[in-house]
Image (cartoon, rainbow, N blue to C red; front, side, top):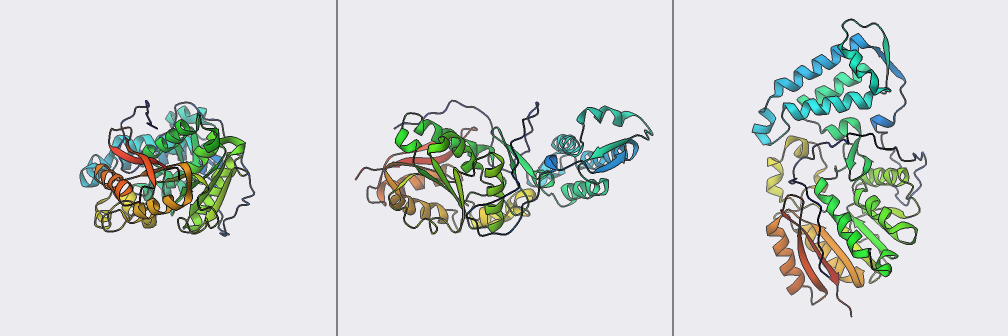
Length: 368
């Protein structure tokens, strides 16, 4: 089966620039209870835009903060971009605008910041001194903006993320498109069991769960207990708690009894070579979990493990797609799948990402 994609966008694999739609997205139903199969007792942080507006400040004091934060952003210039391809002042100023929007109960009041010495008060979802602290972390520590506001806009979703959990990338959205194309005319695969291995925030699992509907099932697995908890939070926010099961564990180890029964195996695994970690943008290398980045000496350790596992876990006709670091890894994986996996797979192919970079390897379990 040949897969084709028509969606176009230019994006390479780097620190994900926060993307906020111009129109306000409807907020999904929020569920307090986080019942799932995850053994973690951790509680995820509530994203800033979902917090109650229990703080207040005068417009004058908020303006002082905004002017201070804006000055810090402009002083960065292109220094971050020059040092490690990080954000420049224009990106930071956009982030500052979004931080202000998420902090205010009523965004229509933003123009009032232009009034000097305005003594009136405004309601905030975060204390003003915390806003100072957050922006200092953004500039001085290069903390990712997604961790500041506690969410990432991905596809048409707003996903909870926090430090210690991998931030989903725009490129990875293509995995959902690929699955959608596969199950569109294949009811057997649509109604089967899919796994998202190394789920992180649960982005892929939530995206797939919405496609499969009530008859399909997604098992989302992550070794990181915080990631498992955040994934459960996101699944519940979108009302998918009966479709998505969260499991804490390493790759296939939690899936005993599913050998030869899975409709799909999906993953955006760690694939960055160990020696390349130190050269990543500060937002990535210093803050995102190393467990989600480091793929071993050549970045292939987990990818090869996934290939071997997929051979035994997929049912005949089952589909897989794995994200990679680019052309070299893609070609290596295709060769491995076609020549070292004992004829287990068919229709193995490479799919490029939005920027035209060879990014994904896909294929099907050969019928027995």
